Structures are given as structure tokens and as C-alpha cells.
Amino acid sequence: MNTAPHQLARSALRRALLLFGWTWAALLVACGGGGDEAAPVPQSPQPIVATSVEAEEQAAYTLLRDERSRCGFGAPSPNSLLAQAARNHANWLVTNDANSHEETPGTPGFTGETALERLQYVGYPVRAVAESIGWGSVAPVANGVAVRALRGLMAVPYHAIGVVAFNLPEVGLALGPSDGYYAPLVVELAAPQGAAVGPVVYPPNSVKTYPCEGTTGVLTRTLAENPNPIPGRDLSTNPTGSSIIVSVASGNTLTLGAGTLVHVASGQTVEVLPPVTASNDPNRHLAPNTGFYLPAQPLAPNSRYQFTFRGSNAGVPFTQSFTYTTGSD
Image (cartoon, rainbow, N blue to C red; front, side, top):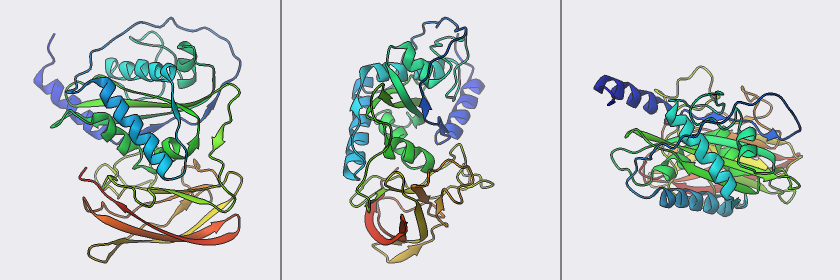
């Protein structure tokens, strides 16, 4: 049965609101357990993209690998079981018209209520997993959907920390089917049994950021993230510029002072909101060694910016500066 025009319009509006409406699954540590489990229901929706799904996913993985490596966070290795778990969940999202980390037993395509259970379903020996979901627009251009979705995840602070800064050694990602408007990208970062888990091990005085020196293609804006990094501000209608995340060695405490952002070509200073660290995080998601900044308003496209900030790393003061370039979005 064809979807009525008004239903398509409503679907397009919902996806538009969810394009940057990320949801965040906290790090889940596998443990023994029991209980009843609903039998998975097979489901294989067909993707609607102009290029091959494999090419889209490879492009997204390459971006993730290169960005993490460039900024000193280390590159996770691709894992086919994680990719299958991501694909299962991406299909479930579209089949059930959902945007959630939790699947409902008995629904079409169900393979586990939580990300941890879905990894166990495909046979991955999971110790820990962090799952992120982003939606990429397929219109007006259907190519590059997965990369657009991943850049969206890297533009919002809590998810940027999750996909860039977490030390989970393996990754699987999958681009789901589309209704002609948007398609979901599911990213599963995980550690198998016996692997190390936690933030990347830095030299004691090292301060890492994303973006970092030489980063290009940064989105000019970030819309809604769940949880909202600025409670009370509707980021879907009043967006900020893409976040700048900061991370130091695990076990260290990060403090941040005011940041200065300058549009290089014009020399104009861009307002930056007060920094957020574990001490003032309204959502209590940040570890003591992480923090972020948000430009108060969207940035100019295809422009170079210089960011300078001060803080302390385990009580040792530092000042750091770097340049990065926005994309055309």
C-alpha cells in the first residue's frame, strides 16, 4: 500500500526534527544475567540510496578513522559482527518508525532490547558497548548520507565525546534504509572480553581536542541533542555552532576557562558560551577528564577559525590554540 501524501509529509517533518536529534546510550558493561527473551523477528527493509550501502559505510568509517587518528584519539578496527548488529538496529528503527536505543520485544526486526543484547545476539563477545544513532538527509543528494550523519554526531558534544574520545577498540556501523527523506546511521563502538576499556591513554600532560589543528569539513551548526547540552534552549530552532570537545588523561581532572574563537579571514571574534566540565555539566554525563565549548551561534560555511582556550590538567595550567575549517553542510 502506498503512503498517503500527508503521511509522507508528516514523516519528513519528523525525520527533519530528528536529523540532529541524537540519543545517547551510556557505556554498558556486559555481565551475566537471565530472564525471558522474545524471539527475534527477521526483517530486511530495502535501502533507498543512490550509491551502494557498502561505499557509504566505508566512507563513514574512513572519516571516523582519520578524524580520530588526526586528533590523537586512536583509530578503532572494523568488526563485521558489530556491523551486523548495527545493521539489524538500523533496519528496526525504520521498520518501526522509531529513534531509540531500546527495541520493543515482538516488533518486526527485534534482536534485543539493549545494544548489549543486540551484540550478544550476533555472537560478539561483548565487554562494553557505546551506541550512537544519527540521521542523514537523502535529499536533495542521496550520496554521502552516512558521512553527513556521522559529521552530525561529531558536531554535538556528548556524542562527539562518545564516537571520538572513547577508547573502545572495535567499531561497526551501518546505514539503514530510507523512506526517501532520511536514513539512520548506527555506530557500535565496543570492546570484546579481555580488552581494555576507557578513555584513550594519553601522556600525563596531553590535552586533546576535537576538532583539532587542521580539521576540515566541520558542520557550521548543531541542532538538538538528547540530552540537551543547553537545557531550556530549543536547539532545533535556535542552534549553536558545532561543539569543541576537550579531553585529558583518564584519572586527571580538567578545568576550563573562557575560550576565544576568531573567524580568520575577517578577524571577527565569535561569541563562545561558558565551558562545560564535570563540575557544571547540567546532565551529569561528563567524566572529570572531559569538557566542551559551544559557539553561541552557527558558524560561517567554508571558513577557517582559530580557537584559543586555557585551563588546567590535573592542576597544571595550560594554554592551547588551533585552527579548523567548516564545510558547506
